[in-house]
Image (cartoon, rainbow, N blue to C red; front, side):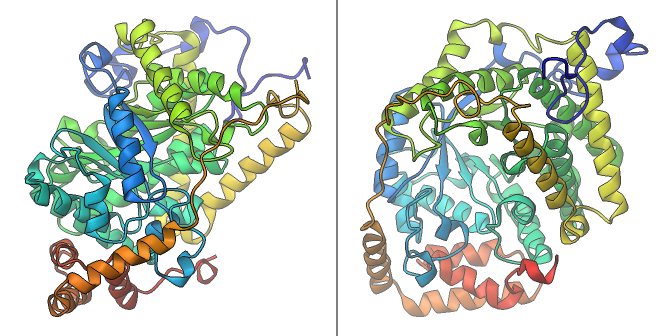
Length: 529
C-alpha cells in the first residue's frame, strides 16, 4: 500500500512534488483575478474575512418547537451568529404530525412544524429582524418560508427585514435523499414562484441553497459534488427564466451548500473551482450582468458521513480539519458537526464544542488575516484546474442528456454517485483508505458518551396542538383559502400569495400540501427509473 500512487477522492493522481511545470500557460489575471471580482476564484468579496467573518451557524432542531427554541437561545448565548433549522421527516415530506405515516418519526431528526403556531413557538423571544435563519427544507420549503414570514409579521417585523436562506433544492432529493413530494416539473414551478415572490416581498432572503452536501454524504466525489450541484443550479435558473423572470432579478439571491471533507487540499481546490465555474456559467451561458449574479456564495457543513461511532472523540479532530478546509476555501457560513452525531442528536456540551471549533479558527489562528492564502500554490492551482476541467466534463455530459432533470429521470447522477460510494467502501474494506478507529488503530476500552434522547410522547403533544389550532380557527376562511390555492395550482398564478393566506388563517402544512398533491400528483421513482 505504501508503494501505491496517492489519488484524490475524485480519482486523479496527487504527485509528490508540484512545480512551475504544472502551471504551464497559467495566467493569474485570467484564472484568479482579484478577490471580489470575476471569476471569483479567490473569493466573492474583496476583503473576505478581514471585512467580516463567516456566519457561524449551528444546525439544530429536535423534538418540539419549544425544546428547539431553548437550544437556539443557548447557541445564541454561546456566540453563534446565525440559526439553522433542522425539520423532522414528516415536515420534510409535507405531513402533519397527526398523519399515520408520521408515527415513530415526529421530532426525531429535527423539529416538528405543523402550523404557524409551531413556527411562532420556535422563535419565541428571538427577534427575527436581528438574526439570520437558514432552514433545511426542500419540497415544502415555500410553505415553511411563508410560516416564517407570518411569524415575523405577528412579531411586528416587516418581511423586507427578514434575513436567511431556505434550502428549497428539490432536484437533489431525487438524486441523493428522497424527501420529495411532487414530480420535477411542478416542483420547479413552485421554486420559480418562490424566486418571483421573494424578489418582491422578501428581498433579503436567499431563495435557494443549491445543495451538493447531500450528494457528498451519499458518496459523491468532490468533482461529482460540484458538477451535479451546478447542473441543478442551471436547471433552476433556466426554469425561472422560462417563467419570465429576468436573471439579474433573482440570481443575486441564489446560494449553495457544500460538504467539507477531511481531505483538506482537495476540498480547498473544490471550493475555488466551483466559484470559477459558476461565474462563467452565469456570465456566458445566461448573460447575467450584475456581478452579484455571478458570485457563488455558499454555506458549508462538515462531513457527517466521515464521523465514526467508534472512538467518537476523534471526530473533534476530523471536524476541526474539515472546518479549516471550509474557511481556507472561502465559505460564507459554516456549521461544524458535533462529535457525537454518528450516535444521536448532539447534546448541549457537544454542540458548544463544535461551535468553539469555529471560534478558535476565527480568533486564535491567522486564517482570517489574508484573502485566499493558498493562491499561487503550484498544487492548489493545479488541483483547482483539474477539478474544474473534470466537473465541466460532467456538465457537458448532462447537457447532452437534455439537462439535469432528464439526467435525473435516467438515473445518471444517482448511478455515478452509487459507483463512487461503492469504490470508497471497497477501499475502506481493503484498508487502502484508512479510517482511524474503524479499520486501523481500534481499541476495546471505549466509553459511551452521554447521548441526547427524544421522548416518544411528543407526537401526542403535537397532535393536541394541531387540534387546538383547528378548534380555534375560522374553518370557512381556511376552506376558501385552500380553494384559492387549488385555483392557482390549476392556472399560472404565483402560488405563494394564496398559500400565505391559507397558512395565515391557520391551515396546516399537510392541508396545503394535500391540495398540491391532488393537483400535481406525487412523485413515484419506479415510474422514472
